[in-house]
Image 1 (cartoon, rainbow, N blue to C red):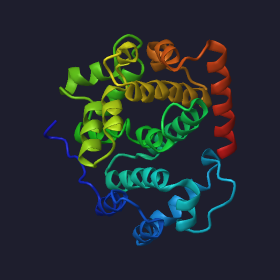
Image 2: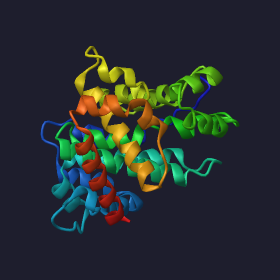
Image 3: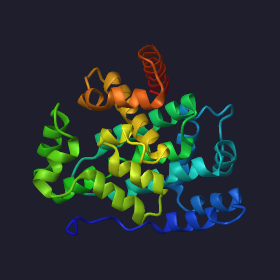
Image 4: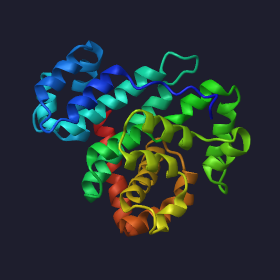
Length: 268
């Protein structure tokens, strides 16, 4: 693990978190921090006006986006954008990875709102960061793409078990470390660490908020695979436990996944 480079916390995120830590964070100050980066401002507006966030009006400025969505949700969006900036630029082509991460974050926001089971900004951040260890391992190990493919297509073992056997670490542990280093919510950090260990879904000693995020991530994975016409071994491993934890019947799960799929197509 010590040989894997964890990107340092971006200075813009430090400034943003410092403002958020105030008793009364100022949307205007946050807009000023974001406004120093033109690319970040444009990306935030694009995300804020996405149908996944259901804003009744279109934001025309960063400050409007913050006021429409709320400070915490905007901070979650920006943290994800900063993660991409910090990790992109390496040899591996990560476009497909970021596309799936964005879809997962959208799905987690959608399902968390529908089920009223987790704050949307926490769900969004978790969705973006739960697999953030993947590109870091890809940049460290030349054969990681093969390991990842093997883990995706293994119907029996935990995904992270296969990584552990080869590297004595896994993408969930690396992602958890980055989340802690970047000052993200402890619920997000723990959920990243545990998001392939579906045994926690039936473990009352694990905090309910963490288990809920893990359960939502299984639903999100199923929704993404359905969008692309593929099956999901992760759903086979953890789907029943996830639905049980979320209190969803088979019909309710199907309806939720259909709604999610419709929203994906609307956003395209």
